[in-house]
Amino acid sequence: MTHILAIDQGTTSSRAILFDASLAPGASSQEEFPQIYPASGWVEHDPEDIWRSVLATCRAAMAKGGLSARDIAAIGITNQRETVVLWDRATGKPLHNAIVWQDRRTADLCARLKAEGHEAMMQEKTGLLLDPYFSGTKLAWLLDHIAGARARAEAGELAFGTIDSWLIWKLTVGAVHATDATNASRTILYNIREGCWDAEICALLDIPMALLPEVRDCAANYGMTEPALLGGAIPILGVAGDQQAATIGQACFQPGMIKSTYGTGCFALLNTGETLVRSQNRMLGTIAYQLDGKPTYALEGSIFIAGAVVQWLRDGLGIIDHVPQTQGLAEAADPTQELYLVPAFTGLGAPYWDPDCRGAIFGLARNSGPAEFARAALESVGHQTRDLWEAMAADWQAETGRALDAATLRVDGGMSASDWTMQFLADILGAPVDRPKVLETTALGAAWLAGMRAGVYPDAAGFAAIWALDRNFAPGMEAKTRESRYAGWKDAVSRTLSRP
Image 1: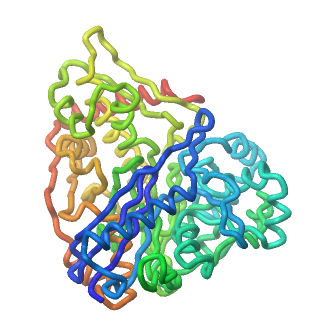
Image 2 (image 1 turned 180 degrees about the vertical axis):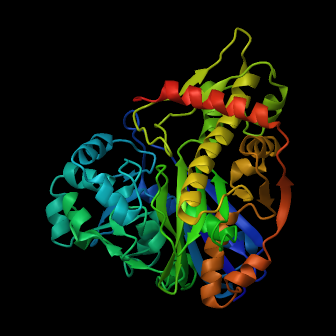
Image 3 (image 1 turned 45 degrees about the vertical axis):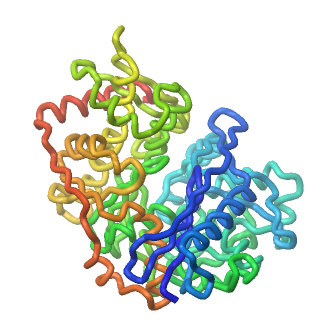
């Protein structure tokens, strides 16, 4: 058994990638699935669409690689986090579409809980802020809006899970109802200090604890796949939410290391080691990974719209046909125009946490056109990343007395392939940006977890030693220009927020 099968279940598509014994990616398959928008700010997926796409891509990757179940030592799963599925334990059928992490339908519930003074308690226990982003209020909404669901949940008839749990259930045909510590840490139901589901928070949201999956390490036994699905039984030995899997794939195992992933959204994680930093700047405390029962913590900043802003240029405005065209347009933009696009299509995440504001563009001139829109879209990703960097640096300084000034940002995800975007990122941060040779770091992290558990791959130190750099982007923008550009961004955001 020389290969690991990594399942990377994302927001808009599912992928399966085979990694060989040297951790090199090989055969892969990817399949998009429909996005469902029932109302403004609402986003759903059909859980059965997700399952079908995962099964199809696993089979296709194995066929392309000429491999059978006998060749695969283990499966690793990484997934879009915070997305909620509620299903019937007896039939395995979902009771409703999955409510996606981007969904804002529980904004009023979050506002009420804040007004009642619950946020401080919830942040202390979970590291999270009260926002519709997290899973707990989504689950509460499902129980409130599906007739009889809460009573059935109390009777033990229903199961709740994030996407990892749903896939584990389907792969094992209901034999295992489990999640890992990283996914659990994103629900706002899990006490990351004590390592357990929190009874007080579940009671506050009226969520029966019988719904909840067992929480395990990131590298652990999650059961065997049903033999008929993939041509043989394969152990599932690694699970991590996508951003934590990317942190692992970037080998950010030492406190002070930071990575940022640019997919549909953008997510930056700063490894804080054994210390759970209580952010004073509206960052999130979370579990970076948990091995051998020991959690390693992180500060996280979440941006809801990164790569999705380029999809908007293509699908919403129609000014590009293919995503790579954006870089050429940005290079051709009029340098005298200073457009700022604030992509708050579903509100703003960290450090603003404003679910009610919506996108805006500032600085339009008569001759503003597709090139200027494209540049503003790409620059918005750099500006938002600096928002996170500034907040994390302040929290890290307050906790440790050390500055992040010497830190290097490790990047991955689809947008990191754009040299123009990564150079602007280094310029606006005033910090070096490292792009690895293996950009599939999310899948790589899941593969390493499973392969390390299976004995195929080295330990964390050995894995870190083989991390390989593709390109370093050094900041080249003058400090005065950098600060002027960033000040313009902050002004644009202040005009976009729904509240002062």
